[in-house]
Image 1 (cartoon, one colour):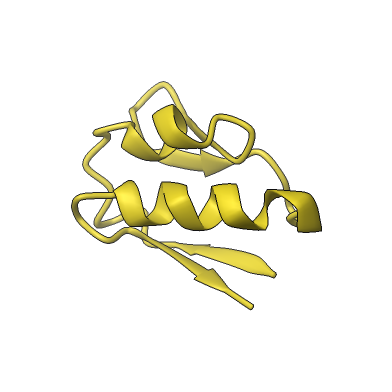
Image 2 (cartoon, one colour):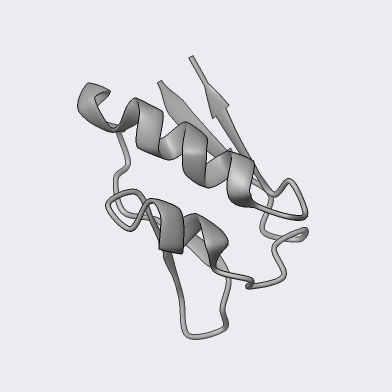
Length: 63
């Protein structure tokens, strides 16, 4: 499982990081960054919840 980010779409709302701080963070410019290069299996549901929370659909979880 991996996460695809569209940094150009990210508006820095931070909802992904609020929902899944184990998976997502924001950099100093309020652009989403991933906490893991390879997503641990136990964080899959959190990653999906964080992606769904994004109001501009800048995140996609790929199985």
